[in-house]
Amino acid sequence: METSNLHSLVTREKYAAIIASRLESAKDTLCQEFSIKNRINSCYIDNLLDESDVKHIYEAFPQKQEMLLLKDLREYKYVGIQIDNFNPIISEIIYAFQHPRVVKIISEITKIEQLFPDEYLYAGGISLMDNGCFLNPHLDNSHDKDRDKYRVLNLLYYVSPDWQEEYGGNLELWDNGLKNKCRTIHSKFNRLVIMVTNKKSLHSVSKINHQGQRCCVSNYYFSNQPVENHDYFHVTSFRGRPDEKLRDLILQGDAMLRNSIRKVFKHGIKKPHYFRK
Image (cartoon, rainbow, N blue to C red):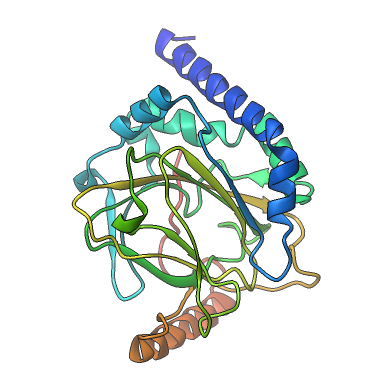
């Protein structure tokens, strides 16, 4: 094995071991937080990795010009999915969250059995948001890229040093729908958020009002069974915010149209957003 590949594997194993250990040490608290009733199941843990390692991950992020820009009424962000084009550290931190030991402890925390990480990073990978970027309220796509498994968990790991809550770019969970106030989780440096994805997990990212970069490492986990007690399917479905009445109507129409297309064309009419190995 080449020295560089061996080094990468060691780095991945190191990250995974630390992540699993931190999750194990906080398992009881995380279980309780995740299972709180009458809200979107979610929990988070701070100081996940050694601070110096997280700064190296942040510094390894590509420039936004090297990433794919997604900008429309639904969202404004930069994403990186073809991760073999980037610093190897990016691959190692992403896939550390897919290590069997990490998946096992997250299964125990969430009480969701038979979790499958996604090696193809369908809609996962890394994202970068800077001044003006946002993500409107939405439900994540219900399935994997082949529509074989249900998307059940979203893991968001924030790596921007000294990112203050007032900068924006924070995760918003609409526990009781858009007619009620959302719950905000600060996209704090070295914080991992674990949240369920289902028919009710409406979430968004607040608009950034700061001259800086909010960087995030994303992973989705899938399962053969939905977390609901019945089968369902939907594409990623966006809504307008409570004060965006016209945008809401447009986005609801957009979601209905794309859902209809996917019922006819299994994979849609655009190339899916996943890592092509």
